[in-house]
Amino acid sequence: MSKPKASMIQQRAIRIDGHVDIEKRMVAAALSSEAPVARSFGNEVLLHTADAIDMTRAAEGLPLLLNHDNGRLPVGRVEGIHLGNDKMLRGQLKFSEATQEARDAWALVEDGTLSDVSVSYRIMDYKQA
Image: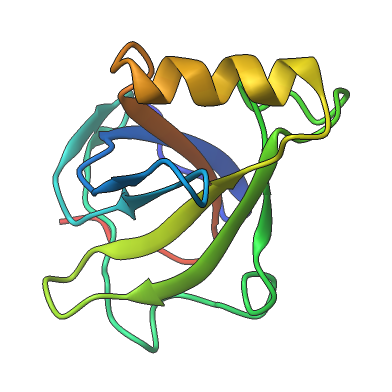
């Protein structure tokens, strides 16, 4: 069983659970939670407190990418990123109209086919229980 390394990039998926605003091409989404995720080193549980999450990069929103592919144009932005009272990181997924790929991604959200999001994050510190 290998231990996690500081600065290791991880990914986790969570269901889109918010209202779809067709006019604004937006949907509210939970981005991460404290739900345990099985890893090679055991169960990973992310702390969701103000001092555990560095929100510096997220202050002005983040690009919304398909499949974590930063080699392609984003399909929109994740706006209003905040830590909810329910200990979940939340935000609004705003889909662009500028590219066909963004329009296609939005159509998949509208019809319920695209119902999960996955976020990348970097582990900076950890405790092993």
